[in-house]
Image 1 (cartoon, helix red, strand yellow):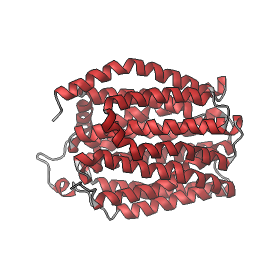
Image 2 (cartoon, helix red, strand yellow; image 1 turned 30 degrees about the vertical axis):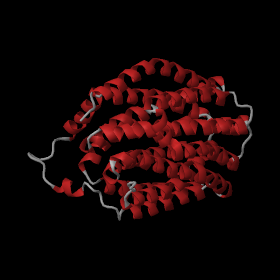
Image 3 (tube, helix red, strand yellow; image 1 turned 90 degrees about the vertical axis):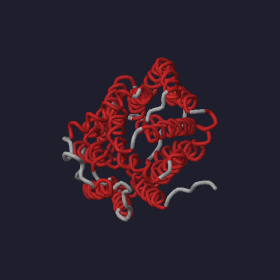
Image 4 (cartoon, rainbow, N blue to C red; image 1 turned 135 degrees about the vertical axis):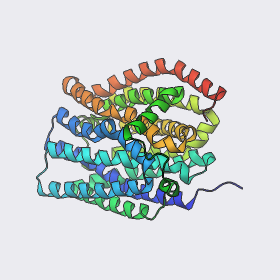
Length: 409
């Protein structure tokens, strides 16, 4: 009989879906609000950079907290704080009192909570799901996140923003509160173990964080994937920071049209979440990774050359599909290889490298767009991704061979 996913997992799934709809509305509304405040690409990039800066500054201590404390409690408490922050944005936007500094500060605070929530969510999943079901569970998580964050939320956010700037942020605040209420009813499977005192007391945070750093540094495959992710997310944000300007200034889209453009990208991500697991099982992890990276590099060059919104939306859908494929492979590898007691810290190092360079990519993209035009960042990012792939493939092949020969305990 085929194993089924647990009731606790489906509770997490529903909470993820609810909050993702609000986040999708926020994703569409925040750049629209930034553009309404300023047309300077450099200032728009500052807001984007502030969103991802917490991954660079706070990811390591967040990972230690996730391994030390109740993971589910950390998740719902982070969402309560996010609900309050987004509600404040709604009030400020409605009153017309918000500017670039306020947007940057609130984006940083929301990003800080996201660091804790996302780290805890990935770390708690293997405790809710049997190891053979991880690809399927991650695929379902990716699919529902995509539906809310990229498919349902952005059109709603764009439409609501067209009515009143405060409305999409109010929706996001409600979704955070509802998700937190649902997660508060879920018990962390590790809670009983966490109550048992550790011999000699708890080690200092510095030692706990260092343990995670050493573990990832010694593992060739995951270390390689983390560095590769850092370079590729830098390129992704370098290109993506100019998307709002490319869509509105070059292609003439309005706020609802921009939301629909993001929804088009979600079609590819949704398809990746639904069929990614069987694709990976049939093709194998390494071919799936290489194909995803190669396709993404080519699609970014295509985005830079897009003659209209239809072509742009189609290419964004392609990037959504292959990015999801990459995520399913790499997240599943981490969850299957890393011991549960270290997963939060190893994830934190991995994602610090992966997301910590995104603020730099955003700032670089803003400078490139300002100096060379809004299409140039995607062209530069696609070229860099191609070069990185050429360097990375031989290393990945050797690391996967090492993993098959000597699996990590």
